[in-house]
Image (cartoon, rainbow, N blue to C red; front, side):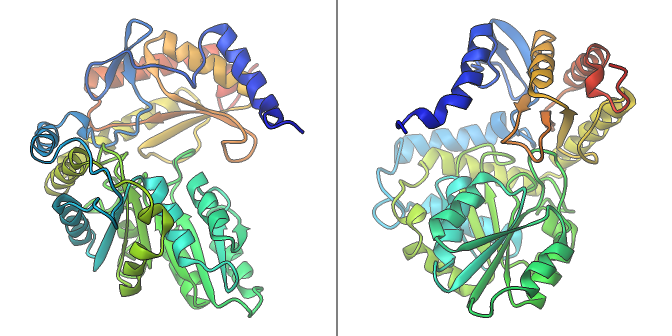
Length: 403
């Protein structure tokens, strides 16, 4: 088998889309006009696939903080956290995140991907331990398991009872047990029953890691995520998140009340051997954290927009994957339907994400709309109008298809 033979199937699809000239995986934002608008193919387009949930990308305080960091500390750290790559901004952000979450400690990684990769591979021993993960977990969680080398067991999506059975049947040889779930799953926008998972995991002496990448800042009374909404912030063992969604930057973190979590700093390769986030990135993330923790209006506006959009798309009869939330996904039966519908929306001045198997749960394709607090009334009107037209043009996207 040749080195590139493995790409044959994906390459065929990629070349097919490229030949048409509207490949959804190669969209270029030619000019960014604001948090919810950009020029794509020369036309002003409403952005509804950016995960800029709390609209922080153009908040003045975050931009000014980044500029000051550039002026005072330069463009990059040129080193990892354990070499020369830890600046005062890194430790301040770790302290501020820990305080916001009400946890004892926090470790900042270079990306959210690296946070999960580094946490799982750092905590889990390939011989003595086992990892149990929700079947719909993100690729970084799967990759963390692979990097750890430990046995990995999947359980049914959002099914604490199935996890209970899996834990009950484990070989007693395992010393450590780590369970990994997400707060909100990014493809469908569905939310985990975190409280039930805490109870099941701890009943069997397992530790629970909850990735709140897409739910941080969004769920809970003060934006701490689904863990807060379920009242189990004090019970979750490890809390991971990213800066690239609600904090509108690049980076990630792990927070915990276990003092042993600090050992990751010299035990986790994705932490030790990756250059640390730039000063400007850290400064803007910290400013965004202050904004969303001090101003609930961002979260309130997001939910106002999400509820309005979900209600409208429901009224149009579209097949929605989950209850109202910051991610609203429309299910379609085939990748051809998904591509055509995605292209239809783009032609109507709306950019969303298209996802197809194997990158989606099950065998269905979907169009994923990411709601932002920065979406104006006019943005929402345009989204509603475009989806109404799509519902008429694509019967296969509706709950009762007359195709």
